[in-house]
Length: 323
Image 1 (cartoon, rainbow, N blue to C red):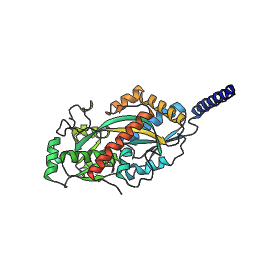
Image 2 (cartoon, rainbow, N blue to C red):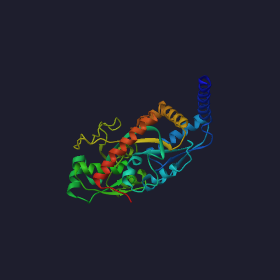
Image 3 (cartoon, helix red, strand yellow):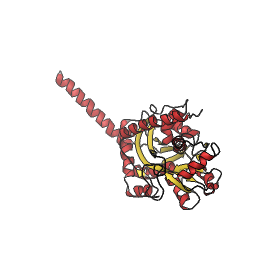
Image 4 (cartoon, helix red, strand yellow):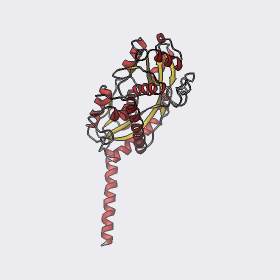
């Protein structure tokens, strides 16, 4: 009897292994879609397009980048949450993905229950920039101007709950200043108005803002990370510039709808890590000041939970909400 039971278990195990292998060989079985909950142009979109190109070449399947901006990323994120959990729909996530559960009382999806982490792809500093007409050339001068005009200066953000929003709210708390947010549907329209002088200050991802700084259209005051960027070595960190303890790295990752087979998640993770390790990809990202990260789905899951906890405290301390 024991031999028979053992044989049955062995056959079941072999069957599962064969099923796993067969599934991996079949994937992807149709065109894929990568949803980006931001407009074209920012690094979120660039990451999606690099993955679409490289993975499409590898798998010989078309991969469409589907930009769905709006609602502080909720529109695109909700679309992904409702997609079939077969691995053929992926979602590019970033800062707002971890902040929105604390910021928005009635999210149409559950961040932890309706998504499966695939990989934490990259990280980069945000950079504090001002329009030259504001006539400040340091963080301390900016803080002094804000304190002299409480509630009078506005700042642009890529949307409520994005890193460009929460980085400024954190600075407001740490520097005891009062600024008024002006939220846009993405970084591209926000920085366009900052360049035009409609708003005078904003945080933006370093890859997006640095070209405008180099062109003299915006003035860089500081980066948000604990160390300076190699692409802007003359720009101090906020901690160096007089806001001790300030340290924020903006991150970018990939998730899939919950219920996606584990075998598919493993395959996607391996394939995306391989893309991130490609020399041309690392060079392209590095030239924009973006740090390639990579790793396992489990590592990304732990990081996501830590980010949700950290920024929920900031949201609560600032009394922020989006109804």
